[in-house]
Image 1 (tube, one colour):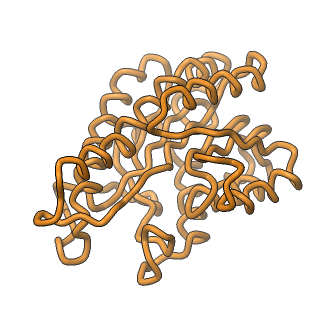
Image 2 (cartoon, one colour):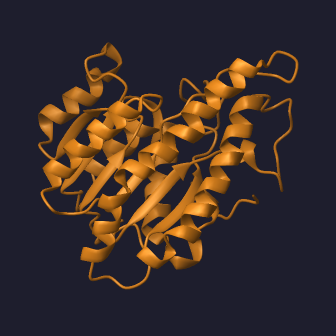
Image 3 (cartoon, rainbow, N blue to C red):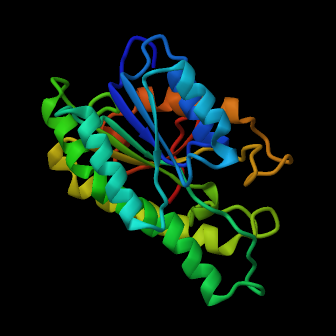
Length: 256
């Protein structure tokens, strides 16, 4: 993404894992965003300490409280972002936050499935709805032609486990509720791309890879640094042909 600047970015689930690393790498770009909004459930929680330390060093990093299952916190965060942008738009919205509790076909309950859907599907839907006016404003204000993350984009974090065309085996990825919720998120991404095309907003789903995080475990193939680096490189290359598509962190298309 060197040479190009995404003016204003928001990343959900930014207090740990991939979200935190994305924030770090945005801050480390030769032309970092003017403002990076990093959200998490509770900025005062001990798990947000590393994020808070970054904010002390970087005045362009703003930490916001946002809980995906609490619409009031989403609306409050959107109002604060709007106030801080002072008429400017939000160029890049990254719906990164999510949960992946263990679940198999035998162990899964109705409550398990609904809980994951509420966080991993309904949450990103509500976040996008709340911040959409700011993303639309960015698209209108941009002088760029076509589609790009520097202009206006909504990126939803998905997973290869949601792929129907090339799904991983149940032995290697048995988290049923997570796979189902992310498959639904893929369709939401597709619908967003169709709906917001006329507004000039790029919408895509990205599989970050199997990453060594609390969710991915130490057995995973990628470090968070490798995954985030690949994601940022992929974001820099996205154009109209990628809108409404499902890609991995390397920029390769993934079968829906």
